[in-house]
Length: 280
Image 1 (spheres, rainbow, N blue to C red):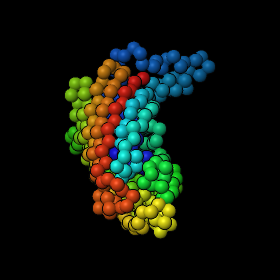
Image 2: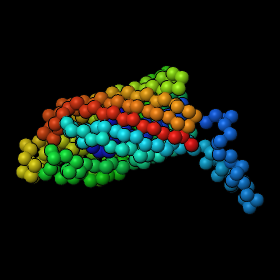
Image 3: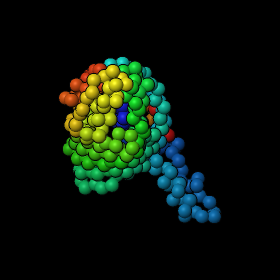
Image 4: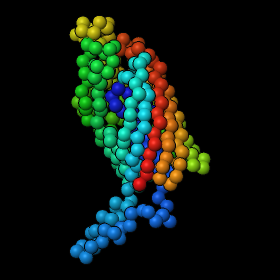
């Protein structure tokens, strides 16, 4: 579970719940599933049947929880934040959450390619007293792509995203995920490293002469490079056919020039999250 000032909570928070639907997949024997026949009408039976079938294919999870994480990426202070969310998946093709829409574009055996569209929340200088005088980083749009390769229980992945507005930067992520089902439990681990370009690094970790004069921090220039490594561990328990509980721990560490930035107070960036969800 990456916690980043840019608002990319691994996809966000809500994206974590998208992993839960396989453990609670629709059972053909269920009688509470949406019945396509209920959408039939003498006026247009064919088209309404199609609409009903498509609606019945969506898996929707509604829930909320709490997150404790650094106030911003590099902070040594923590905030507890409520996490309301709603997510939806359409088979293996479309995933929707409050921050991002992901669409599978291509698959060939164990290889897959998906595209994402979302937004970046930026950073406010009033998030912490340590940021006073650095100014705000505006919200920006995000477009990206992810390439995955499955090998048994492991999924290797690489993603690239471009932020339009805000930092006007780029980020790339390389990692591997492991998942295991044990009865009602779904266990997962995600090890990754994140690289960012100069625009992103300067926006979040650089200090210009003007910012130095306003904030009292020393001037600092920074270029492109790897900014952090992360290990995310999670466990999800299917309480019933509909209710689920998820706990997650994130262990992040800022690297190299990022850790040396005067904006950064602490290189070690831990976080924890608890979620309760209801699947319709």
